[in-house]
Amino acid sequence: MIGLQHYLVVGAILFVLGMFAVLTRRNAIAMLMGIELILNACNLNFVAFSRYVTANVEGQMIAIFVIVLAAAEAAVALAIILAIYQELRSISPDETNTLKG
Image (cartoon, rainbow, N blue to C red; front, top):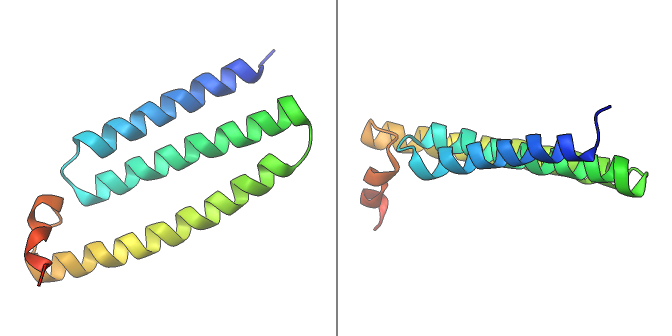
């Protein structure tokens, strides 16, 4: 039987992998993918707690809101990454300091 602990372990693994990707990658797209993993881990925890603890749909509603927020964040971030690539011909976050001023 799959219980709450199983979902929490999977959520923790997703969160750790996302944090690892954000902290170690030098590519902006890979960092964006790490942020998406973190948001998916949060969604999994919201839905699992909603199912096993409160037995209502509040966790699912919050998860849908986070999915919409993640889609908007991905669209804006990809637009910024494309603008940086057109200007610098690189998507490395280390080189974006030239856009100041």
